[in-house]
Every structure is written in structure tokens, then in C-alpha cells.
Length: 341
Image (cartoon, rainbow, N blue to C red; front, side, top):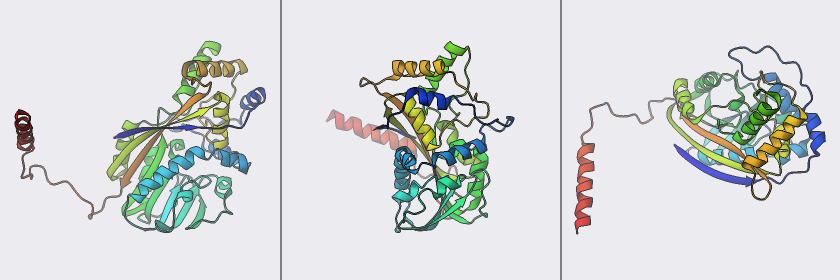
């Protein structure tokens, strides 16, 4: 498992502090009753994504994170030495993967997202490959079994309630030897913001509420891929650190991305003094020397293949003809002999 770190500096448009606090503190629509198996309100998430696409220019300003991760996803796709006819981009948003592909990689990309407004934001832009747009809920895939060559998903599946079920549906939709490539936000994402809110709420209100969505961790991804029936799995991580002028610009960008909190059990109201306390704690605990604050996005990348008889398989246990013990021993003896000389 590989882990890397990458830093970005975000130049933010100005935000009037108290105007923002007023908007952030307004009561949201009444939430449906939570169940033991439902963490996220999918309808709320769809509405958030729809709203984030209304102002096209502001929406494009916050494409920086998903565009960067999409570039890294396409780089992984290039490692697969084959040309695809059609690839499904699941949770495509406004179109981040499509910006980095060309006709030498595939003939057609099917962009799928739960938000029709996000899908249509950049519909007037022409690309090298054919593009089809479909409104699709990641929890209920419409594709037939053994029908897809490849599925790619960029920073979308962390909002799915049943992640194992979604992966199983993707695996069933793939043809034998089809590939699934995805990126997902990991559990360390926005740990600075989570800690700041917890400390501020605990101090000012005597308790805490889920202000940051729960996310999976790296250890579980391998098990989820295997459970879904994928072979030859690969997992690695990046830590992308983005600098913001303050906590308020960070939250504003998350809203403009359509990445606001959608947890069913969240409280819809946040007091002004709690919000200000969280901002002060954030800057005190994690602030940069130049006065900005860092925000960490842990990105988990995964690759899995649908089983096929053409794929390499391990030999039966006990069929080896060379002793690893003897090979290592001879290597150590040779090294010692060279050192003596």
C-alpha cells in the first residue's frame, strides 16, 4: 500500500463573515426518520449538488480538487494497455474525468450522476470522445449484467449508504476481465475541521454532533473489493492538503462543490458563537505561519478486476520448485563474502 502527500494553495474569493454565518445557520428542510442502515439523506445530497451547479462560474472555481484527482485517475487508466469502446463515469458530476481523456483511450464516455443540473452544466463544451449523459443513482445501477468494459468513479462513492452493495452492482455490470477504478475520500479527510467543531461544540453547547460525514478507512477498502468479487486488487492513498484564508472559505468551497454535510442525524442549526469558536480553534491548532489554514483531503484509490480465465492465477500450494529459504540464505552468504573481500 502506497501513501503520498501533495499540497495545493487555494486562492479564494472574499466572503463576508456574518453574511456567511447567517446562511450557514438557516434551518434545512425537515429530515426523514433515520434507519439503522441509512446514514446519508440521498435526496438532500441531490439538492445540494443541484444548487451547487446553478451559478456556473462559481461552480467552476471549485473544480480544482476533483479535477486534480481526476487527472491522477486517468493516469492510472493509462497504465492499462488497451483501448476501450465505452467507459462509465459513475458520479461524474459536471465532468472531471472527461477533461483528461482523448480518443486514443476510448471511443465513448457515459457520464452518470444523480444530479441532472450537474450533468448539464458543461453540456455545450465539445470533447474528443463521444459523451452520453445519464441521471443515475449510484445505489441503483441500471446496467445489465456483463455489459460494461470499465467503470470509473471519481470522489463520489463516499456518499453511498450501502458501499458494499454498490460495489457488488458494479462488479455484476462489468464484463469478465472488466476493470473498476475509483477514488474515494478516506477517514482522515478534513480531520482539522472535524476536531475544531467537536472542541467548539463541546465547550459551548456541552455535546457534539456529526458535522463531518463518516468515511471509510484504507483498511476496509481491500475487504470491500474482495467481498464484491473483484480480483487483482490494488489500493493506494494520497494526502492532498489545500490552504485556505480561513475556515469560512473552506466551508464555502465545500458548499459550492456540493459536498456539504448530508448525514441524517446532523443538527440543522449551528450557533454563531460556536462557529466563531471553531474557526478560532482551527487557526490556533492547525494554522500556517502565513495566517492561512490547511485542509487535508485523504484520497483512497482502488482498482479491481472482474474474474476471468485469462487472468494470472497463483500456483497450487506446494507446487514451487525453488526454496525461498535457500535463495535468501545464498544471497546473505554472497553478501557476507563480498564484505569480507
